[in-house]
Length: 356
Image (cartoon, rainbow, N blue to C red; front, side):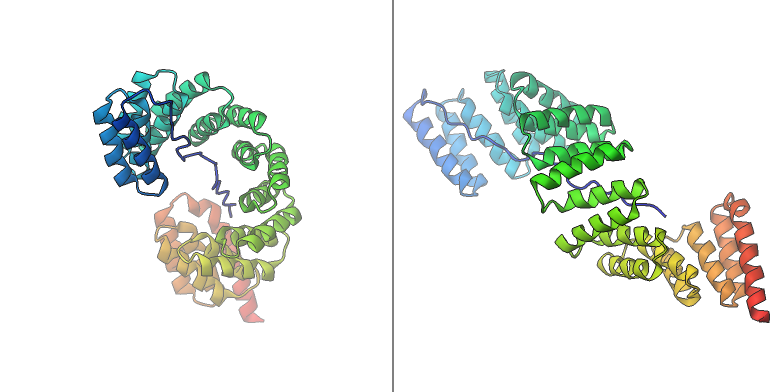
């Protein structure tokens, strides 16, 4: 069994924050075109806005604001390379423009060029050290690269600057959780929840932390809150099922796994764990069916073959069971030494039950 600690909301500030308007030091035509572009852009028409920004730049080729806003429009259209070119031109014209570095970092991030994005966020921090979003996005890169200590430092700076933002505590909590510092993670999720009582992901991940610490009752409470807020959260049902199983609440676990399967039918983990629960409850037909479903989704899952084989032993289907065991050992030869005693014990018990 495993806990699916999906860290969903790292809080990357991907939006383009500023549409710059400077004092009109250019021709009237450039000013008019820039203003029209801004209106179109704010109305959700980036393609039309680009045409106006082009017109502004034709009138004044050194107008940094037009490059910046055209870069924003290209970014909104997903044309990241074009956006990068425009932000680079802004930086050439004004090397101290922190927002241009920040936005170019976002565009590089989209292109999965995290090394270059990291440099841009660092440049933005040097130019604007009291802007939380710069630290948040650089922290996100460190997090994705599993540099959790560096991520914690950046998210801590973001918290210092914006202590009323729940996302800052959530992000740092995720970094602590990923580095197995569960108590610290729980404290941060507590703060995030105090600031935002509807923060479903914070309840969910706090539940993960409690589960890692072995406090299944508190884990169940948090997963239940996550389910109340997001009734279609398959992972929350799955993890609550694991917690219920560890408390010996087999029926509750089976109900949770079943709901997780209904919501996410292509995930093999829930039927696998429901199959184990059915085995413990001696519902061998149901167990064999669940492990068969796991095998359908993951044909090379050796343990699913083993457990379906064990269920078939108890069903009296020894030939089919032996075929499952052979397949399991073919897929994972090292499994035999570990599993063979369990198989032998199941066969002995099944024969004893048959005699009775």
